[in-house]
Structure formats: structure tokens, C-alpha cells
Image (tube, rainbow, N blue to C red; front, top):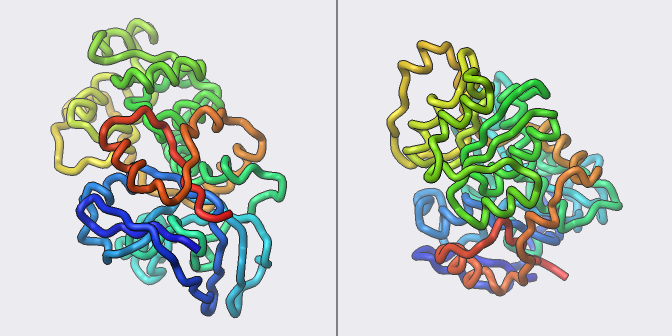
Amino acid sequence: MKGAFYQGNKRFSVGEVRPQPPGLGQVRLKVAYSGICGTDYHVYLGHMDQRIKTPQVIGHEMSGEVAEVGEGVEGYKVGDKVVVRPLDPCRKCPACELEHYNICPDLNFIGIDSPGSFQGSWTVPAHTLHHLPDTIDMRQAAMIEPIAVAAHDVRLGLVTRKDYVVVLGAGPIGMLEALLAKIKGARVLVSEINQFRVNLARELGMEVVNPREIDLPKYVEEQTGTAAADAVFEVTGAPDAAEMMTKLVRTRGRIVIVGIFAEPVKVDLRQIQWREISVFGVRNYGPEDFEAAISLVTAKALPLDRLISDIRPLEQVQATFEEIERGANFMKVLLKCSE
């Protein structure tokens, strides 16, 4: 079995991994595909070196099947198709006592804080697994984790068919949020500056604008009859978008903060107070979001083949991250982790 090891300093090495026999409550998986996400790119850039014990296999978006079952595990057998919800909370803290496991302050995010899925054999706690239908396309199943992120965000954003929704940023998560909001029946406007993403969103039937080319608040007011948006999803993590989001939402509307901000940014709190705007922070997902994502993939409700830009062998991991750094026109690249 092969694995891709993050070495630090923007370097990966690909080498043999020795399968780790599952211990009590664990399952060993044969990983089929693993997606490269924005978090993995932050690891590549060195932004998470304080959490990584190099050399370490990273990655957490995956599909695979059970290869070996450890002692005490029930409900799974060899050959079962599964995905991993890569959260291993402490189950002791106040957040965990409230069953808010996804925001445990001592959360082990598997694939960052411990070894991840860029390998052919991966041993994980059994409680992180979700069953997949036997008929599912395993390439599309590798998209379940990011779909679960979007499902969590749209759920907490309380999106309904009556809403006008603005999504700031059309990367993989923003694109999925826009698609899921449309499935809910909402009217959706996507704001994006990258022309590749603009074109793809339009090809997928989205209404898209470039905020550098128009007055975005004025445009939203015109489209909504001056009422502004019911919900705004900030998915860029960019300071100018943080300033923009409060200008787009109506009185008692909702802002959902999805993008990760490296530093504190300027936000117009006066508008939040004056309009009684609700602001939701979102992080990770819950089991129900994974089940929703699995149902969407099983029903072929999303254009996933259009969102998967390429599928590459694990040996091309270094070249792929370098292409991403150079601004390659990718939405999602999958690594094939085993035969």
C-alpha cells in the first residue's frame, strides 16, 4: 500500500505504508479515492505545521471499504462500502456533554491532528463511519464529506424555498452550498471573481456576478425589490467579503460565516444591530449532515462529475499541489489511493 506523507516546507513524499491492524473499536479501511480540499492546501502551505507531526499522511475526504474489523465493533463487516466523518471528540468537555461533538475544543480532526486518508490503508475509530449503498459510484462518494459541510451550513442557515440567498465565493464548498440552496427551492445569486469558477457556475445553471464589475449591494436590492437577501453565505475568508456581507442582508436576515479568517477582520456590527441580523458561525458537520449528503449522492441530485476536475494517482500528489498553488483551474481533484 502507498501513502502520501507531508514532509513540511511544501513537500510530499510517496512511500509504502504498513497496514495498521485495528484495535478495540477500530476498523481498517481500503481507501479508494481521497479528495484534495482547501484545508489540505493550507497544510501544504505550512499554515498548520503546529498540528502536524511530520512526516504525516494527511487528507480526510474519502470513499473506501472495510478491510478489517477490530474487537468490539458491531454493524460493519469486510467489504462494506463506507465514508469517514473524520471527527474524534474528547467526549468529556462541556461541548461534548451537550453532544456538540463537532465543536469540541479538544477535537481530533482526523487527517490533520492524526494520520489521514491519502493512503491505501487507513485505520480509524468505527464511530466515524457511515455506510454507503453497494451501488454508489465510489468516485462520487469521495465528495460526500464536502457535501456534508455544505449541508450543515445550509441547515444552520435555515434556508427555505421562499429565500433569496447570496453565496460569496464559488469554490467547492460555496458551489455546493449554492446547489443545495437551489435544491431547497431558494433563488440563489453567486458572487465570484475567478473566471473559471464564474463560467462553471453559469454552466451549472447559477446566476453569477463578479463583485469587481458591479455594485453588488445595489444589484441585490434591485433583484429583491430593495428588501435585500434573506441569507448570505460568506465562503471566501477574505476581508472585503466580511465587509460586504452586512451590506447584502435584509432586516432580520441571516449571515452564515463559512470561510476561515486567518486574522480578525472589519465587520460592521452597527448594521447587525440595527437590522437585527442573525449571524451563524459554522464548523464541520454532524452525523445527520453526512446522511443527507449520502442521500444526495445516491439520488444523483448533484452534478458531481462536473465538479470533479480530475482523478490522479497518489504519486502525482506533489505536482497537483504545485498546480493548485499556481492557480490551476480545478474545482476538485481526487487521488486514487488503491487499486
